[in-house]
Image (cartoon, rainbow, N blue to C red; front, top):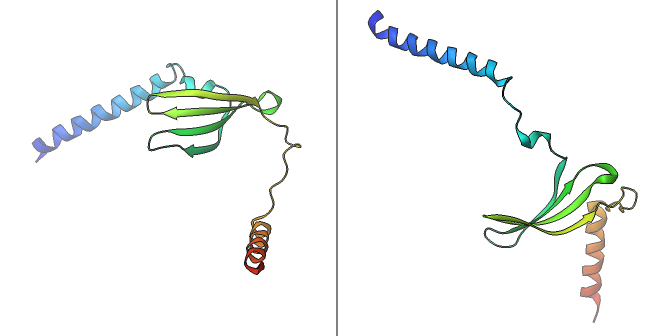
Length: 115
């Protein structure tokens, strides 16, 4: 029985040694480039076809931020338009969903009531 267990223990010991060595080497490896870039945030995404999308991305934060409109396909990403982000105070607050629902009900009622 001990003969059958020795290969399993040997394999387990090798796996533990490899895990410890990789964990120690991780501190010496360079950082991934994607973690050290500008702040990115996807604002919206619209499907244009089975594999094509149009994506709006905010790059940066504060007054330096830009809004990029990108065309995304399986083999390429193209910048379609670039514009500065509007200031936070310029953006009008969105009405609550209940206000939208009541306004929609009013509009549909007017259409049905009209001769």
